[in-house]
Amino acid sequence: HERLTQRFVDRRTSVLMRRLRENAMLEAEINAAGDVLVEGQHVGSLQGFRFTPDPGAAGEAAKTLNAAALKALAGEFEARATRVFDAVDDAFALANDGVIRWLGEPLAKITAGAGILSPTCRILADEQLTGAALDKVKQRLDLWLGQHVKKLLGPLEVLEKGEGLEGTTRGVAFQIAEELGVLDRTRVAKEIKAFSQEDRGALRKLGVRFGAYHIYLPLLLKPAPRSLAALLWALHHGGLDHVKGLDEVPHLAASGRTSFTADAEIPKGFYRAAGFRVCGERVVRVDILERLADLIRPAIAYRPGASAGEPPPGAADAEGFVVTVAMTSLTGCSGEAFSSILKSLNYVPAQRPGPAITAPLIPAAATEP
Image 1 (cartoon, rainbow, N blue to C red):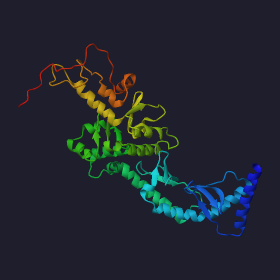
Image 2: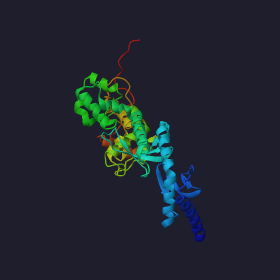
Image 3: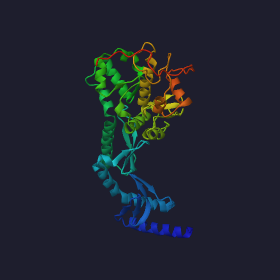
Image 4: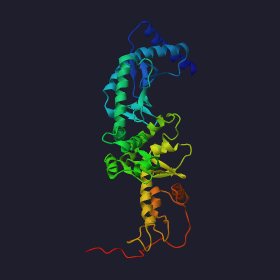
């Protein structure tokens, strides 16, 4: 077998060496799998603008194959650069590993820019991609990346610029943008307390919702915007190679999970950028946490003998509330897991006698017919 392989390598090498000595134009053929054939001889593979020599060759044979490939691929690099430059936006995609791919082939990796919403990209290419061809690829990918961020996180760019906003309102808008659309309310509690209705209205017009725990943009909680936001957060907090959760957290978010078990090795800030909050042993989607607060708030506020109307679900006969199925269904967990969520929100579990209120203790206010 080794003798046959050597004979094949020698024959392949001799064919290519003869063509190189003749200084002839070498014809390169690249199949759908990326295999590169020069003058009918397999010399390696090409992905994007990176050539990998055939690992089966060594010594002089490897040098010959590489020289033949580089000479034959010079024209292919130029042609590919033109095709990339002319490609439609749908031909490109950004994956959770931070790599921009063109028709599935890696072309660049995103890097941190001047601002969190303005990433740049580093071209993944051999030295043979130079001059005008390199400029074409870089220009097209920079344009696509900017449009991609605008398409998925455009409302944040509006908040960052703050046009039409003044003073404290503009400052809060900027913080929302810097936190990629999910801002812990405690960070701006003082400012929000001083807001007028006009201030709140101005931010609501820009898609902002004021929740019990977060100031956020509901429309940006979809998987695609949050996946991009998580990437951008990672770029500015250690880099893509040093932040755990880049693949699994967006995957869990895309699966529709409203909560899942927290991983202590994943930064809380990364979870927040992905649209979640660490609550005890669970990680809960921020809009689900706000809906949970909307269920708990009226149950706590109800006072038997003082509140009119039907008691809300979960109302108790004293201070506090009773956990309902609706509450646990929201988060997709119960028992100790759900209890850890409530504890993280500063609720203290207590065993008290008596059932939840099931009927009003004072009549509802009469209504006109």
